Structure formats: C-alpha cells, structure tokens
View 1 (cartoon, rainbow, N blue to C red):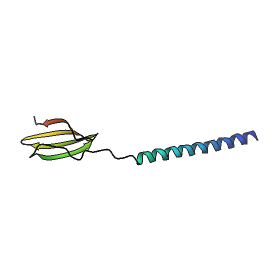
View 2 (view 1 turned 90 degrees about the vertical axis):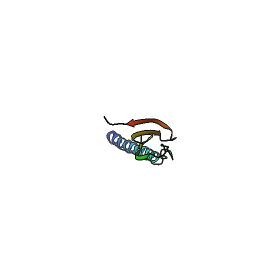
View 3 (view 1 turned 30 degrees about the vertical axis):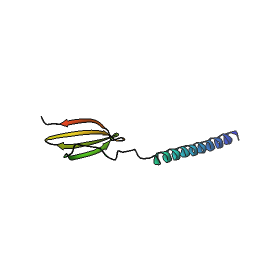
View 4 (view 1 turned 60 degrees about the vertical axis):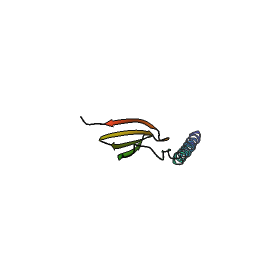
Length: 93
C-alpha cells in the first residue's frame, strides 16, 4: 500500500515538473519572438563620386567597401548611429 502511494506521488510530481518546464519554455519562446529588431542606421556617408562595391550589416556595424579614385576603401560604421568608426584602405602587394 505504501509503495503504491510513493509511486503515485512520484508520477504526479514528474507530471508537475514537466508542466512547469513547458510553461518556462513557452515564456522564453514568447520573449525571444516578440523582441524588437536591432536598430540600423538609415544612412551612412561616403565621399562624393565614390562607387559602392559592397555593403554588409554584421556584428553591430555597417561595412561599406567603395572605390574612390584609384583606391579601394573599407569604411566601418556604427549600425545604430551611422557614425564612422574606422576607414581602411585596401591595397595590393
């Protein structure tokens, strides 16, 4: 009789724990799904007359490769504000 009661208690506690885990997963899923998208700058500035080769939005930065005159440049902008963080000239050896 006591063994049956223990088994019944263990089963009901297991079901209760599974229910709490399901509620926890549902809450985490809901929070992650409804989070707002990251802010991206509406505009970044490169020198006039430049030709844009590529632009990437990665790791909180906007990376723009462009040709200005005879040089190829990489400009790294902050994705939130659009401020220039770094400018690198890409050359050949």
